[in-house]
Image (cartoon, rainbow, N blue to C red; front, side, top):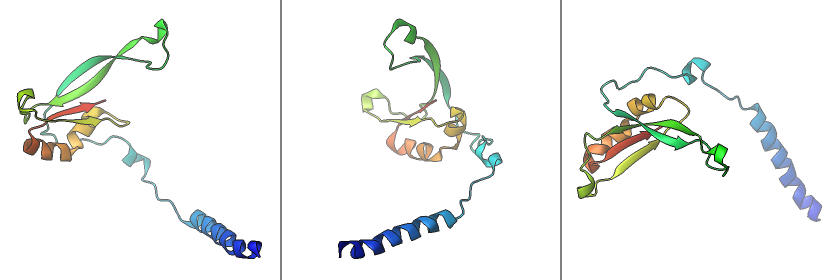
Length: 122
């Protein structure tokens, strides 16, 4: 009795799995996955570097090597620390941080309203 009520569920599961395999997956061509020229050439930012520890998980002297981590800032709209204005941070993706800064319109759209400092971290 229990097996008979379980059988339709199993059959439905396998039908769904086979249907999923039949669905074509559309991926963009490789040319679209590469960095494109920026859309916003009028975005201004300053480039900075921070000496960052390379390995945060191995606690031996050899793991304390440093690299220069890049970050970009835009303080055009920032109200400053005395006004308790926010800092909006964009954690970078797998690409050049300049491209993301120049093509992330949302942060630049809301920065004036909140009087925010913008920081883009590579």
